Image (spheres, rainbow, N blue to C red):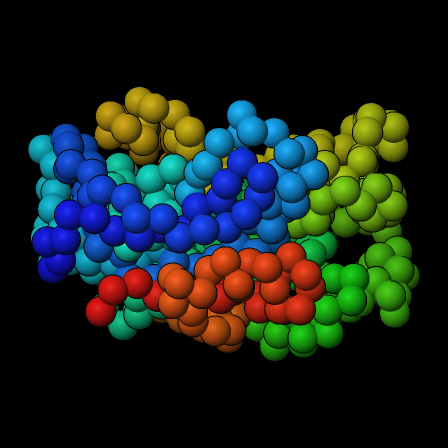
Length: 348
């Protein structure tokens, strides 16, 4: 375990530039765990969106902040009240601003979980993405035989496809023009109809698969595509559910409300996200009232990885050193890097 008093982290500036900055190691405190991070899985869509918005706004008051929200490493120190992990344990961590793309993270105890034997640090570092996709599928209320559409086949969409099938859902899934992603989704969700919307409309694909436009739910991991939003709504049955996992798609109140469709957002990794009492004070929800909090979703994801019921390994494209972060993000912003779930590597 490291005893260094400073560490490097990936940051963005107020004008959307990516830098690597030296920072002091924080003091461990009650209900928190100090972790020497080893890997962090990037979220290209989320963070490139943040950077593009900052570059467009050019607002000096936006400040400088860390990038990233998911990782895996080794416990260096535990604070008071923490008993489920100990120094030297391999752990997965989640949740900005606590977990980020950096060498050391101080994370709440409920957002830090031991990695089971047989699961690598690289795989476990995707835990934040895993629970975000998981909670979106929970919000869609997928049951045995549910007809489900997943739109957007980045890492979140491909993980959601695997969850839907594990729940017994009947799946159709699409992306716009990403043949590699479509091929990966088809491989990891065998039997599903996976297609490009350049080759086939959502309506035609749904009718070809089910004989009618009568989906029980749709999970959308794209943003800003109003045409997609309208077509999704037309293919979901009355009183069905549309889950927005990636932002606004311009559904509005027209068709969805006329059919009494439920248009719901997905609260990141689940109940507890962004709540100080839960995250910072370690006050968990009673399991009899809230079965799957963000922390319990983390435990489920790690167990699914252990059982190989969900596979993230084919999505991990490349591993980069932290010093490469500015160049990697620039390539992503320029569209010259099509990585799905690249990693940053830290330390030994």
